[in-house]
Image (cartoon, rainbow, N blue to C red; front, side):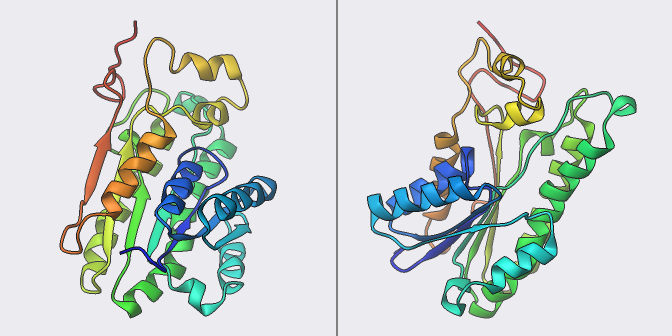
Length: 254
């Protein structure tokens, strides 16, 4: 039963986060959607409320800052802080360079978003879940958290960290009855490559040339599948890739 349930989805302005918000709304789950692009959040909020007759809170803040994250959290009424599902989706890749040529700004952006951002919001939500003895956290990992590839060392390191944090979180929260799952996609066509290549559309499109990549909706479907398992079932880890991809470095293109 999902009646009166609340889900918090980070990075909900586009891609996997937006698709996840939509599929959860379709199930009748009330939502807190977060991100940095307030205009997109407000538009999504209106769409979801109108289409699915649910309640939606849209909060714009920079998840890399604990101060901003805490302020956003404290702006919620106590009933809205009773989160049932936390979808830690906010994340990015910045740049694709050999490590001796890498940008410190890119590295800090990835570390601050992918690792610290996940920890910032989790530190606020998890105590409530622990107190209520219920909840489910889904951390969006990556094939990059299972392997490493050329020019992607720092991004891979951040996703390896997410993998380790998720495993530790699952152990720590077990005593409180809180489920923790890692959903790790391979190649998904979203804004991911456009962000990585800093707006270079042609270069971003070439990442998926000659194959059918996953879509944001594929990952959202997977997230809902995980959340909808019976209470006694926890799917710990899912690695999902397009049929044309066997690993981070082995892809068949037509």
